[in-house]
Image (cartoon, rainbow over all chains, first blue to last red; front, side, top):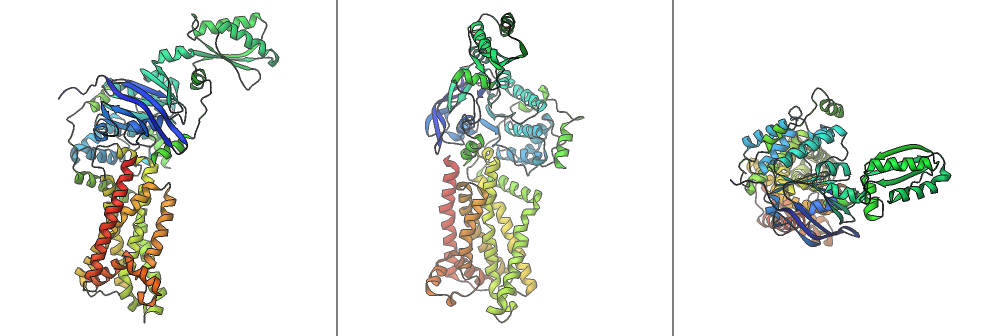
Length: 339
Length: 285
């Protein structure tokens, strides 16, 4: 048997469109996902991430455009695609009335294993995912983290070449989230390509080797995490001034020092600015230090100061000039997509 | 209570630490098994339906308590008025109420499918490279078990109340067989609505709207000769009427060839038309 490790492109999508009534969930989405790594699809609620995944996983037909997974067309060669992918997401789950073992046996049999082999595979997977104790319990009695693990275990039952993980850590506590990350790393190390959708920049940053930022059903930026962040700035300074009346002066000063967008917050003493952008030789910390010393020299008193990573909101603001406010209720979109 | 169990297991002393070696071992690609046959895939799905009955036995309420109530209620409500006694009425009425109850239960196929879709289980099934109708066939095969159970419960109640079929065991068995064949085919109407409609409530609503006239405007409760002409015309065309006639004949030890032919034709019609529509809808997305 030749190696399953894939080379070249796992996914090629061109101009995918899909509407639900008046809502354009996909508006000409292009995607090129190299095989053998984690590819992050980053976007706010309602950006079209789930719809894109559903089209690529053959669950939904696009209205227009085309997509290939390992060279197979997702519409005309759906079966060939299905044989090589698996999907885990909020809406592609396991049967919560059944126990962990029963769910995995069921899927094993559906993938062509005989019952003893399916049982053996189920036990093996449950052990690797720390679910042996919970094996005989109905999945609806699992905690959020356990639930996500059984979902992922179900997805690697037949060691897929491409795994879709649709917001795998949304709603998880930090520890469970870390566990999912570890699992994703192990899956990729083994040679499976992972397409991961997320709302969190830090998640995409930690796991993905490339990221596509999606908004209103379109890719608005694409590149390595480093490229994306340098286009946006590596950090954000948040300042709270003692006196609201000096804010215009502070804003002017920040603009001159940083040569980057400065944002006035609804709170009349708060001000936010991007640092560490491509336009400056200084790193974020050095720039922040300069901001503080310049403010102090101008006699502007700062009560509170923090330096953080840019949030998804700020990435969005930088890329689109509009905040990442959810355009539509994602649940509506996905339920619509589930019809 | 259940959430306590879940959180306490997630916490110490059993904190899960993903082990790279253990994960690598389960990820090692073995020989990929060959695709299961349509039959094997359908059987796997019907195994799921049976497991669901095992884990959620409350769902058997529809196929046990509901039919018992139907039999008792109508036997004593109409028995005195429509025949000399409830016991006499029962000889005529039992096959009809059996058909009514089981056909009404078929709507839970649509409700169950709709719930599966809402919960997202179907999305995973639909990404599997298996024979496409298997998930639905398996589900309906599981439901057929429920139909048989309901029919047997009704028969038992009937026997207790004094139903004495002339057809004997064979005739009763043939009657139930016809009913199950029809119900299997008729279930595809509800899989279609289960896929098309938005919520399980609307599936219920549509089902009731179809099922009430279909079962009541038939020969289940009274002989059609007592009805006005226009209604008789509907009753005579109603598939439920044909089904009831053929089941009644079988249970009384005779054969109504025309009713049986119509029943099988209607069954084929529902299976072909709504089975096709269902699969079209299932694959369409």
